[in-house]
Length: 161
Image (cartoon, rainbow, N blue to C red; front, side, top):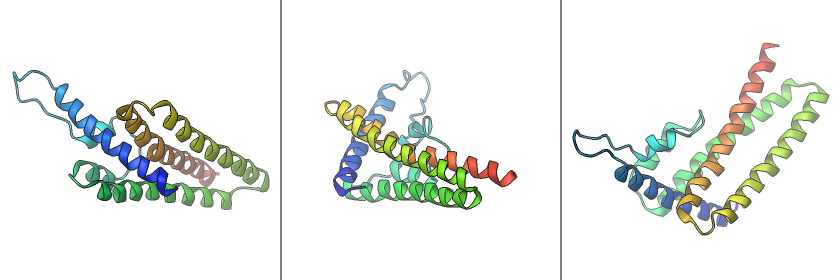
């Protein structure tokens, strides 16, 4: 990921996290009982794919400067990218030549989809920084996680054969 994209991602994440925290506080029920205000991580978990790490959730709940958040977000992106690459390489080793070529073609298509999705989200949410931040969070980290999940599932199927 280019530094410029990473900085955009962190800025968008910071805005999204602030928005989500405020939205949770505003949406809380009237004080007839002590309402439970959701943490940022709890809100994110509601739509997150399986596989996002506890370290990421801990990070988004801790107060920190933007530069620290940049490190946190990038660390999760790197973890998810590593999961994806590990599953991809392991799967390649298990497949015959035809299946390998199909996987390579599929992965190239997915990478193009991932890049184009980011470009589209960057354009469509350019004026709405709050929505853009939410989409950037889901678009960058969640897509990597979802693809890693899929490749790990394929690996599980191949291992059973």
